[in-house]
Image (cartoon, rainbow, N blue to C red; front, top):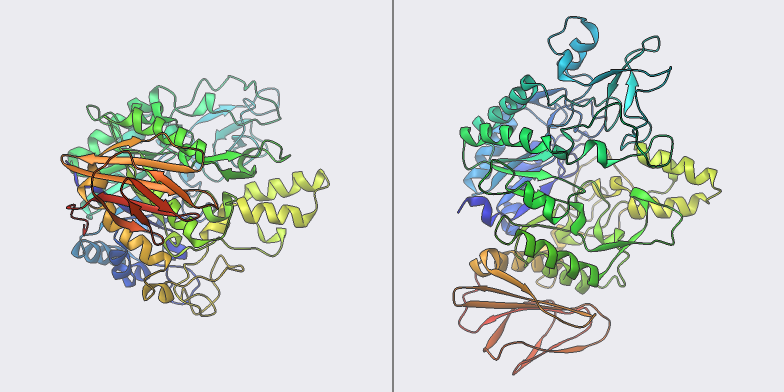
Length: 557
């Protein structure tokens, strides 16, 4: 068994976690300052969003130097101190590694543009235009074409799945494969324990002369640039080199559109692949099909039925292969308490959802602030949204005569930038994040880690107890079985050797009595309210949850 089989991950957006030099931007010293808080939460692994040198066109995912820390976040000395102090607290550190693309300010790309004989020309993807237009009609995830002209007078284009300032790497080139592995090994030598492989499913592209059959001027179409067969080849070569450097390196891949079977293909233990796959297809959400807004910003809500269907699928398919990633979201989507149109603001429901997700078989990933019930930012004007997808949506909806107030409400509910606000450490003007206005700032609903630390009934206290329970062998390594229930109840069993546990959730505004499937003597290990267990019947109040274990079970973690 590897250390990461029992990983409990805390995702930190460094720019928004803690500012220590009063420039409004979170930094590595801020993370160091809060390591005891992180440790006391009950996690054992920290995932940092990109910290490399970057022009910040895409908040660090556009890297111009993979071997140095961005000055706005800190220095190499700061990073080495962070690694040292995290390891002293038995905390592992994972870095976010963009491997599909670089910044257009990266020396490789700058040399490829300026030097006709550049050895880096083949590090990127180029194509000539067709009849005065782009080489094909593929659409970028950030809007517009995937192709940008090298210069206005040129007929040569370069390829970018994301922003035009983020050219895609050509993974067919063995020098690219070797260079990216060397980058990872450099940070492994610095003490890094693992990597999140950003956008790895896009490393391979289809025949660049193909056209998408989807409608629209520049349709996005995964058929041509996601999950193609060559991805496994590139991934295997990369992983084998990194694992040769340190076999205990944890690699979890971002495959946002992957289903359970595709996740299985990328995590087979007998092959050099990822250890875990993170997908956005297991949040348990359904889209509002009646909405006129489609795609990324289409309104959604939580469906208990869909959650059951999703996880019985993921748990079954991955049972003998790898662990599912258990998460309610990350930096790429709005916070789940805003996004999922939950039926109540009762904090008991948030606690129930946390138990529902994290005590399943799998690796929990908690997004910073989630543990204190933090909501997303609430911008006051549509003009406050400056990320490319939001700007494009605003223009499209205005053209359809949507009212700005309706557009604002939609964006505050769905836009990813709302989830990247400063952590709310206390109730001071800027939430204890900084003494000056943060880089990403708007109205925030009240929340305070300081107040919750001393409140035994707080969200933070519940998360601490929940993660202690998760760290037991029963809930971290045990088998999983989803039980048949009515539409308002979710129940699943966890078993390992002689240990037994059952989790029961009441997802309704009415009290319920649930008949347990066993006559074992069970005790309440954790609940979000007073729970009555009489014989084989457990009584739960509205939005109630409980985890029950055998009377003799050790539950201290």
